[in-house]
Length: 183
Picture 1 (cartoon, rainbow, N blue to C red):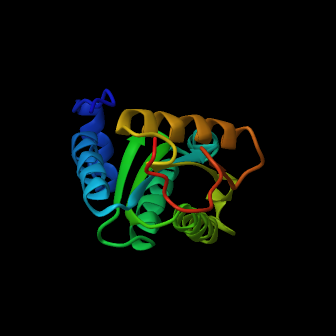
Picture 2 (cartoon, rainbow, N blue to C red):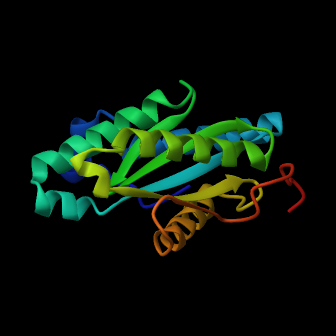
């Protein structure tokens, strides 16, 4: 599996600021979640989350405010998930969440809705309120049968979500029903 993840000084800076998983560990976890899903007949979700307008926070307030927003978002995501879930910082404005052991597509939707609500509460009424969140969600095996495609489908869904109003969740496919293993 290759998602073109590389350990660079840039990645290390992301990890140091938020304390989240780095890209190489994310790749390992994604591979592990796929193996586990194959073994137990479950699924796993990839959620790509964009912090919209982070550049505006950096410009209007300062980079320290932007960094605080990133740390707050990272903590909110981590605190809202199970210990078996993985949260990683993907880029300046994006986080990736891996949610293993899903039995239905609905379960992925519930996690995404819970995370969006938690993030929206955290940033409500603050100077950082100009930040909104866009989610792209893809679920294995329904949306792709390999991690690279799955990640790309989540990315495409997230880009589509960003074109909507703030606080939008876009799914790679209909977020209901069972896991589909006959592909």
